[in-house]
Length: 476
Image 1 (tube, rainbow, N blue to C red):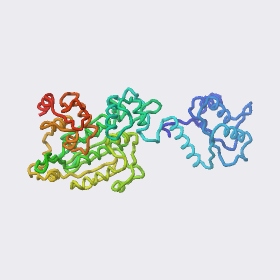
Image 2 (image 1 turned 30 degrees about the horizontal axis):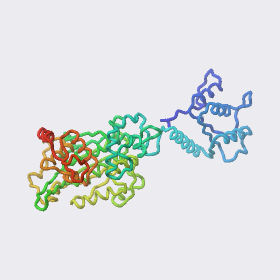
Image 3 (image 1 turned 90 degrees about the vertical axis):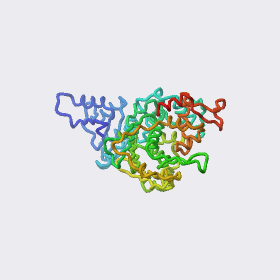
Image 4 (image 1 turned 120 degrees about the vertical axis):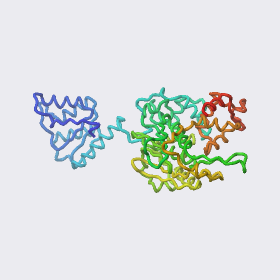
């Protein structure tokens, strides 16, 4: 408790040319908490018949100090009459606590002091995401991000708020305000610069050509932004590095597409790390792609009710950051039923991969084993031996393409709707990020609608503009 308290004991005062009562009463005036231990003896009585203990108690009461009173013994019959009177008086004004041994006293004092710290919000026992972010204000949140969230959540899960709902309405609905202040979850979800307030809330992505984390690192990125941005960037990073196979149109008008690791598995591993990490840690999420595996590490652990074994079977949802998890659910980034790990296991099995491995080291890590040739088998082809070889360690590697550029590339051949785009990008369903990217590209006039008069038509598709083709030409 030394981190929070500096106790003063009169018995520790050295000899000094000062009046005794001036010393201890001055310390009562200076203190934040008066902690009284009432035993059997009353103590020395001054000219007014009052002991130092009662003088201290009176001063603390007059100055409205926090008073914690502990009474020795279960009975008061053996105590000095004036001490009995003081104990009764204290009992009429506050809650006393009795103790029998010094060990009991220690436990009781510790509990009482912890309660004081909680009441003054100097420590917390609730979820981190529900705690007030002391340096952030409502103006630090991005209204545009909140408006886009409302649109995506209404479309994905039927969010009951109107499209024109105010930021305050949204934050209130999601329980992201605390006495007018914004909580940590609000910063992580909607702030313009979340890392300005929560420095370690970033994702570090690295690609190694070998099986060990060695320098030089061929490709390394640190991503910042909201939790939605972190998930999207990290998933894009991995998908841009692993094998993607495109089959023929022999059996369908649409060519089959397959990644060596199902995109849903990559996304689940990343979004779990972002949603369930310990944000009080100075560590950052690490996404590391090796030649034989993908590792997603976060500074966190399992809640007490879960074990590594239970993760492999149906289990309840126990989010570390419940206020963060709810908006991720509303935009279909996660589910709320604890099905994520089971879904990862099933999809890896169906793709011919080993089941994901879950581990606890200095944090929580998910390991997904790679089979580079698996994508080609999935679309009915075989990968040549020459192309199956790993890149040499010294070979430079390009940076991963943004989702915006990947969308533009998909539109080169012909106009596509959102569902078709989503499938070609390896997504299970139309994501909030894809909707956002399409809005950005429309705003940049690099794509246009095929039915501009009916933006919400189910037949709506998107095609490249001359500006979009020019942008791709520069990228190539």
